[in-house]
Amino acid sequence: MAPDSPPASATPPDPWTLLNRLGQRLNQTLEAGAIAVDPVWLVAMATPPILGALASARAIGSALDQLGATSEELFRGDRLPVLHQTEAPTAHPPAPSPD
Image (cartoon, rainbow, N blue to C red):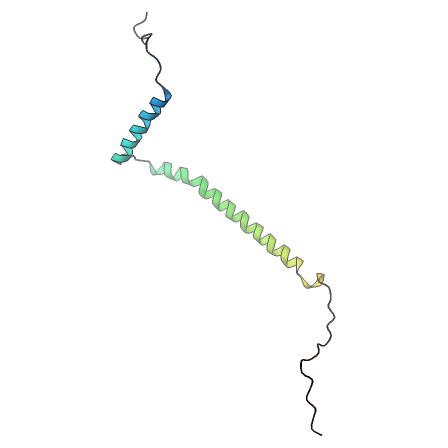
């Protein structure tokens, strides 16, 4: 048997135990305030959502412009029927003139 090999009775650690240990270490790190993130990474992680939001805003603006142009064409006067107006009767008949 080679001296570098683990003993036969050693079993691999349980994944839940590993996750528990990792969670405990993360809590200790957070409590100590020892997390230091490089600003370059923060910018790199924030760039895709910002670019996506800008592209979405541009697409929404373009769609709203098209919707406005379409509704303007729909309600333009040359497509509406011509309504022949007659004089509406007045509510009060004209007063008789004193002759």
